[in-house]
Figure 1 (tube, rainbow, N blue to C red):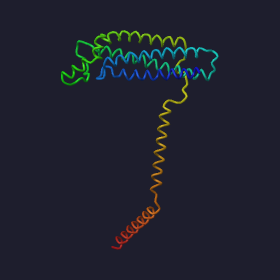
Figure 2: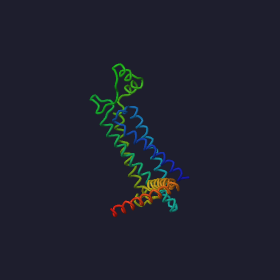
Figure 3: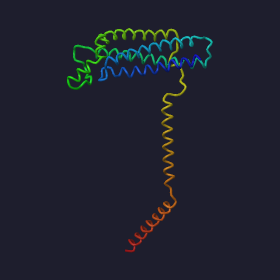
Figure 4: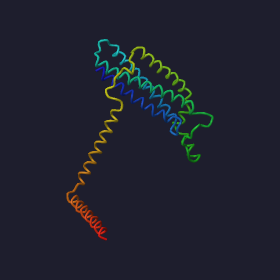
Length: 237
């Protein structure tokens, strides 16, 4: 039960971290907006909550002295995967902080990139005066409040990583993987090569028609006879 629970938590954390990574890549681009920044905030908060729950569950299990060797090896693999998720989350949060500072939402100066807004003045004004835009303006500058909070959360994630290493000492280089690196790629490549070879063999075997082979043999014999007669005529002349 503990292993399945840890796997479920880790899977949810992995998906949330991947979602946050893709959202961070759009900061500063034409799709950047306050809606995106709010979604980034919600996603990273969910990732931090899952990280706390996953870390606490794995810590309790790995500090159990009665854990058998096989189960401990499995939980250590989960621990290494969990550590990797935290490292990626911290790196993406730092990237979001840098991009958010470089591309503020509401700045008096000209933005560094074009946001993709185009059209006549009336159309642009209609979009700018939408209900959601008015609500965002009434709430004030979202990034002014969120960026300092993001900076504090980055420090908290770093402290979480350090605390993990202090509570559970599982060096990554000591954990053995179930399969060699790139085994899935190699298996798919070998499967593709074998299928291609089978298709090529079928094509070669399918093109081997007895009547065509007989015709080719007769044609070769005729060519050889013609060459021999030409040599004889050349010698007699």
